[in-house]
Image (tube, rainbow, N blue to C red; front, side):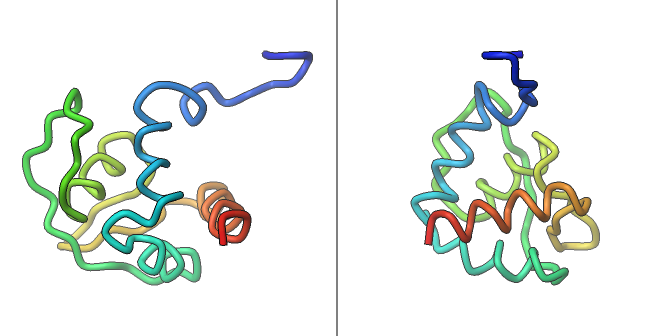
Length: 99
């Protein structure tokens, strides 16, 4: 709680700021993929070994791996997608606000 407002700490601190840096700055052109995910599409990805302590992400697959680890995306059968409506709405706001 900050200034009498509840805040969801897991999207406001730590590695999430780093991950959203990649989204805000469209690193590796992930904004287009996220726009597809916001409308319910799934995006092909190769999720490999990723150390949760390493935030030097160099490929789109590393970015998506980190997002999966932190619960910002879900991975199934070689594809990533937004796991729930609440996150979908947050991504939609982020993409609209940053465009």
